[in-house]
Image (tube, rainbow, N blue to C red; front, side, top):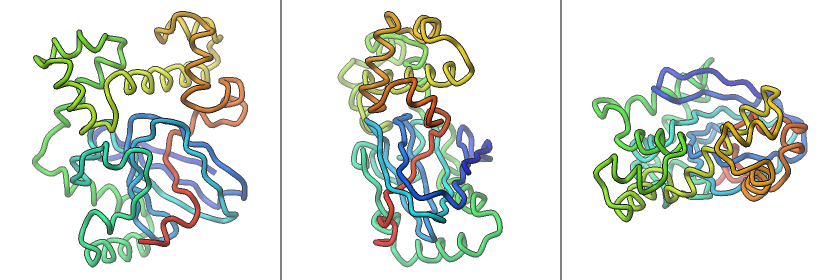
Length: 244
């Protein structure tokens, strides 16, 4: 069963998958990076540019901290584009001995999400909000790349470089991902597709359908039927975490 709650880390969400059934899962692009505890191993899930499919082993458990867009690089210490469409053991990014201590602490904790929050909070202390959050906010509102660059006092090329470092991909891709997530939230709430398309900034319902299929790999109807649209967490392919 999938559950989530608002995190003590600003803009983040703690989520859990408990005793999942065997089968396959689909994780959708959301502009975020996650810190995962997968069967005892700490793993970083980079930003996805397309649907991420993963096999699920019966009984597997995972806990994750989904960071707000642009926050991941501040926590993990690497540009987001280096982790794009990847799942990487945290020990590959930080000293392995220190990561093993954190894994032991998380594994023994009654509330593992609190440990993940503590790890992220410790890295963010004194940093303040992500300086790139404003770019994501404006793009999510449907502002053009040129308009966002102008408001932030940047050239479009500078904005593109900043987005690669902060979000893992350029502003146009980020805008597409955030718009799809908005459309999925509205659709999950029962709004008709034509109205969703209009409210979310698509040209029409056909445009909405094409974009969802391109980013999610399946149709909007299939996503809503499977419940994938509500699950924005970023699980790891089975077995990868054991390499940490």
